[in-house]
Image (cartoon, rainbow, N blue to C red; front, side, top):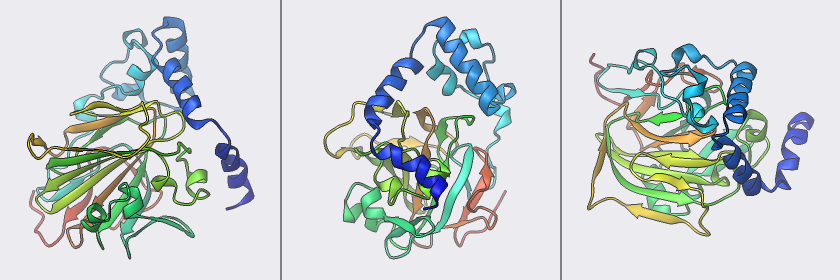
Length: 291
């Protein structure tokens, strides 16, 4: 941890993280016209949000700041890769890390990692599905599109809500807080796909007012005192590649896990690369790529 990162990170240990996020939720869901329009205009200007890509561009049409933050895009601005065996990027953002799960560990930053067991709620059998597999961590900044889409067609098997902290997930905090993504509150969705299990882990952060999925709605808040699990064996939910699966009400991080020898990331898909929803980030291993 360098000194600058420490200055950014250390105060977060004493912040009332959930309390601040609750306050932010109140503000972002407010339908007070002057307040929500000021918040929207400020974010657009400060972060350089490209509103030309938005399906709705009239600020008055957004009933709240959160409605703007989870805005739809014009369908043509994020075309879905048409390669048959391609893995599609699930979000706009920047790659934090991408690589192999080695000895059950997932690389976070220099000198830091966390285990798949911890990430997935402490269940060793669940984590075993991804033993010696691959992972990627994608960070969504405030300017990005905040809906999350399927990298591959899949059938939902279970969803797990894991309570935790709400540290920021920006670059400085990622370099400074040990096991960050396995400490923050998160929602893990496990899907069956044509290459076996796929986990999509939606990681919360400070000021992230909620995480929701298309099949459940808002999962958090409220924050449960212990891990909660929902099973979908009796009511299968199938989502196609490119379909929306969830969203962040404020920005955060998504982590994707695949099993051993199932997926190979693109060579240029690595830390710090900017990525767009729908683009090819990898391919099913051992299969011919057919357009």
